[in-house]
Length: 423
Image 1 (cartoon, rainbow, N blue to C red):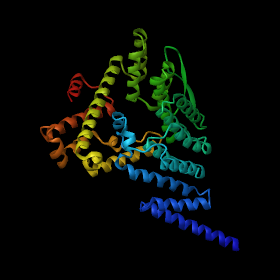
Image 2 (cartoon, rainbow, N blue to C red):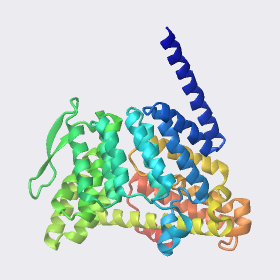
Image 3 (spheres, helix red, strand yellow):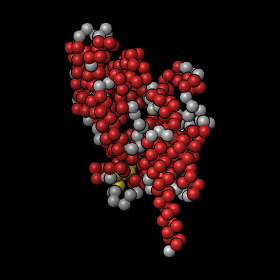
Image 4 (cartoon, one colour):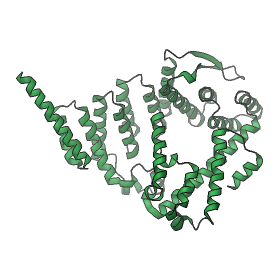
């Protein structure tokens, strides 16, 4: 009875220490919070939550020091332009706070093997800190996979990390493993499908992709896309690339992006005689003639160029006015809120994909809203455009064309292509 009372008292003390540490964290008293978590770990080395929050404390210290630079998507562009940028504006991989955060995250993953949020936050930290190598990320992923060897999303995620560091053999290995695991999932029925009329080559596909588990379908798409990309641009293997292209096409349907990629590759890789046969094969299976495929590639390139140019111009002018706070100060709150909602929804559906800046979730018409916001218009953009109506018509026309090309899938007429080129 006495031992039970002592254990109960110890548990209450631990809970009190944990709550005190969390309260210090909330108040941004990170050193005091770390002392609380260290005390808990010293008493109980298997206290996973204490390790997790200890890691978050060190991460929060770095976020506080680096301020608005933390998590900004264009930091690497600035760093490339100035070789001394990292030394002057960032922290090094040997910074004790970086080391302590990573070690604590690693321990937390071991001690909290069923909490995927720990892995997600650990990988987010390594992505945003930008100074750690692939070995650190591999170690985090491997610790998770030791407890969850059947987690196909984690294998795809590790493959994505490998691609990030141009470690193509590891990327292929991880993606192939995920593909094999998904296809061996008991409810899925497989069948042979002849994807190449010229060679008679076949692939094994899941017969009913619509009936797949959502997490499996997303993971399979990302794994196939990873290998398709690798064989397209990094390990040039045309026959393997075709295999992954057609399986990706079968899984996703008439997705213009992958069709445009294959069309471009055929036009640049195949000799004249085989090119025509390949394009005819592509036409038969996707319903596009060679001329239509080229038109589809052209209009997608025009849309992407217009959107990128407008986006780059907007960021540049807002930064000139507001500095690193351009997003918070230059974009209306309701536009930010709407974009954040879309970002959250997308990341929940696609947890394995790269985290993008919230800017990427704006609608094209949102650019007009930002430019014509009263303060921005008077202080920044009035000198660039003659009237509100001029920029509104320009951006709304671009948005209409983008919806046609990216969503409706219709081919533009010659007059529409000319108008898009003018935009």
